[in-house]
Every structure is written in C-alpha cells, then in structure tokens.
Image (cartoon, rainbow, N blue to C red):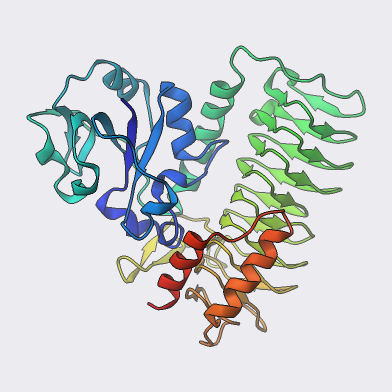
Length: 385
C-alpha cells in the first residue's frame, strides 16, 4: 500500500507552475510536497495528475492505496487519519476529498468526483490548502520551520566553522559536504539549513528561516532575509527576501528578489530586480489565468515565474507580475505584469518552439542534465496552445 497524491480539480489555479508539473512536485520549504509526505509517513508516494503529465511520474501497482489531495498542508490530525482510516472510508470537506483508503483503478480516478469511490464519508472540517501560487509564500515560514524540525530531528549537524559569526547555533544545521566560511548566520529569527555539498561564500549574511538545497551556492556578500528557500542546484546572490526558488535556478548577481516564487531552470540576468510593494501601499492584484481576472495577493507580492524562464540583465519586474513557462524576457523600463508562456521579449513575439527546446537543453547541460523526451513533448503541447 502506498500514498497517491492527486491533483485537485483546482490545479489550474496554480498556473504557471502546474502547467508542466504536478501539484505534488512543487517545492516550498526544504521538501517538495511529495518528499514531505514520504518522510512524514515512511510510505512510498505516487502522483496522479493530468494525463499529459502522468508519464513524468509513472504508475503505482494495482491495489489498495491511500489517496491524498496534494494541495493540502499536512498536520497531526491528517497523519493520525492515515494511520487509522479503514478501507473504503474517507475524510472530506466542502471542497471534496481530503484523504481516503480504497482500491481504485488508477486511470479511472476522477478528482472532480473523488468522494464517489468511498462507501463511508467522514466530515473532517477545514484543512489548509494551497490555492494560488502566492499562497506558497503565505505558508512558507511555517513550512520551513516544520521541515527543519522534521529533517534534523535526531541528527547531528556538522561543526560550524569558527570563521563564521553565528546566533542561536542550535538552530543551524549543516549537512555533510557543505562549505560555510566567513559568513553571518543569524538563526535567532528562524532556523538555517545548509544542504549537502552546498556552499555559502564569504561575506554572506543570512537571517532565518532559510534553506539552501543540496549542491546549491550562495555567492559572496549575499544578503538573505527569511523566509527563503533556494532548492537543490540553485545559485543565489545579491539581496533575496521571503522567496522560493524551487530548484536548478539562478539569481546569482546583485539585484533584489522579494516575495517571489520562481520555478525550476530559471535564470535572472545581472541587475534584475522585482518590485514587491505598490507605491500606493495598496493591495497587490495578481493575474490569475484560471479565473481570467486579477485577484488580491496581499500587501506584498513580487513575481511568479514559471519553469525555464529567463530575464535579461537589468530587467525591472513590476509588482505582482506573472511570467509564464519558457519565456526569454527583455525590454525597456518596467516590464508588463503579464508575460505569457513562450514569450520572446515582452511585446507579443512568440518564442519559437524548436529554439526554446534547444535553449532549455543548453541550460540543463550547464548543470549536467538534459531535456528528456517526455519533457519535450509536454513543452511542445504547451507551446501549441
């Protein structure tokens, strides 16, 4: 028996990130959603997503499994329910299935009718769900602290080098192979996690909560404010505050990244900065492709950037901007706050699909990876829309 994390019917509200990935593969905090559930339960985790994405994740063996809405934030009550729930029983709320145990034909599962597969439905009450991309930031501080405790419990950190200046060393955890010298690590505001083989270069100043993923690099004299996550194989530099880089992305130079969610394989050219606060100090309105309208995202929201997108040097990103998948962004002055998928520049020119695929593969080669055939077909599908 395994856990199957399924995409809720509202998965499209998490565009651009869920255009080329499942909800379960979103990273905020130290883990992706799938990695977090796997660590919490000790069970193998599978993913059920849109048919055009399913081949990225494979298929579980037939039989009885526990189905869980991937957009839900786990808590102790849900973990207890997973341990105790009976076959053909489920927990649900007004938005649908929360979790349930049953033998369901994987290919036939319909998240829009998910409760129908269970004989007994229990009312669980309200749960926390991620509904929109900017809500990843709303939960980020909470989840970073949760993940830090989950990952470091019962483990011993590497010794912190005497060249560093530190506060609350008990809340600093350094994995094997990491290098951290001549930095300021202030964990009095939240924990600091340095992943395996990661590097924090000289002069960097970090205020927790903060996570630096495996094999990632924080360049010299970086200034980091929590809550911030740089996922695996990322490069950070300049000033970064309350942001998420999901993995394999670069913001290596001076410039400001604040209240931003950045997908995988993105690159910010030197001097790129985003605004995260309106000059009127009003509520930031962010475009939702799913709802076809602007929605309130709070007083601070920087940029939502889909996978495989890049900015030119000295790009100026407007408050509450949404940049789609596979965009090569450049232009004078403040950039538009909506840049569609496969944009070349910001004036409605289409990024030719063949060239986009070659360019993405070139970026992947820089980190010793390549674009798979499955990924290519997904991008071709998106480009044709």
